[in-house]
Structures are given as C-alpha cells and as structure tokens.
Length: 268
Image (cartoon, rainbow, N blue to C red):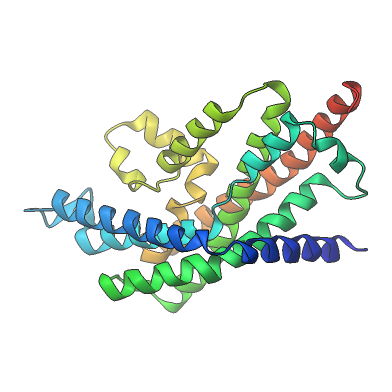
C-alpha cells in the first residue's frame, strides 16, 4: 500500500473515531466561542479612547483574535499527549511492529482530526462569531487564498512541534508539566494572544520571534489575511513559514528514528 493510501486510511479511521464521540465537541464549540468573545471585549476595553494601538485599529485587532480562534479550532490536537502516553505506558512497542512509519501514522490521524474539527468545530464557531460580531474580510481574494495556504502550513508546523514534544517522553517518565508549559508558550510565541508588533519596544524579543518557527502557527496567517505586509515581505514570510515546515517535518523523521533505536536498545 502506498504512503498516500496509508495516510488516507489513518485519516479516515481518526475521523470515524471522533465522529463516534462528537457530543463532547459541542462543548468545544462553546469554549472557542467564549474565548473569542472574551478577546473581543478585552481588546475593545484596551482601545477605549484610542484610535490605534501599536499601529492596529480596533477592527483589525478584533478580527485578528477572532479569526485566530476559528483557525485554532481547526488545527489543534493532543497528539503530543497521545504519543507521550503510548511511550510511557509501553504501548509504543506494538507500533514498532507495524510496517509503517510512526510519523505517517500520527500524520494521518492528525489529518482526520483536522477534517473533523473543520466541519464540526471551526464551521459552527465561525458562524457564531460572524453572526454575533463584525469582522473585517480578507484584504483581497489573493490574500484570502494565501491565507488558506498559510493555514495549511500552520497545521503542519503545529503537528511537527506536537510530534517532537511527544517524543520527549522517551527521556522522562512524566511529561505533563512540560506539555502544559508548551501549551502556554505556543499561545504566546505564535502570536495567538496578541500580535508580535506589541514587542517592538523590546528588540531582542522581537528579533527572536522573527526567526523562530512559532509565528507561522498564528501570526503569519493573520498578517496575510489582513494584508498588513507588502507583497515582498509577504512572499518572504510565507517562504520562511514553508522552510520551517519542511525542516521540522524532516527533523520529526530523524528524531523518530533516533527514538526507535533507543527503544530497541531498551528492549522495546
């Protein structure tokens, strides 16, 4: 069976499993809507008496946070938790017997979850937000298409970071604290909570954020959506996002091979 067929098989299985437990995602829809609503009113309060803050208008800022939560509802997953649990419980040994790559298994599963969440979480959350709040549309049709492409790259970045985080379980018995720290840091470093322009007064922090891959998860797609970059900068930022995506996926495969050898030496 080809890699594409295997990926589809894992994606289909993941989608059907989540479909069987879809009721819990109703609560997820409410949660994401509440997150977006809180961010909406919080930034409304911050902008009180100000036309712009750090070069952002109120409409742009509210659109930034709300659309960010819609996108996050699509690509978010707990694959790092699942992988870490399988390693710590020893269940990873059964995966080693399969004639397929562990990376391919988790990638297919993540794709199935992506499709499910897009249909049963992002879509209803987006409808609720559009009905209740006024959002700024994409800067143009081209920006909208490039935004979709950037979101696809963001999904792959998030998956790669999750996979690498889950593999860290091979070096420690308990990973929950680290996973929680990663969850909070990703929200901060990716620009999920606030645009990275807010750090312009701190050049060292700003420059570090500029080269790290995390901004490709939230900040880059939204800057494309709002058209806040000129064409040359947008092209360079999208190429940087693509480069980090490819690099991290390659590193995922190399890291898995290293972990597999370590598990074999340990008797796994």
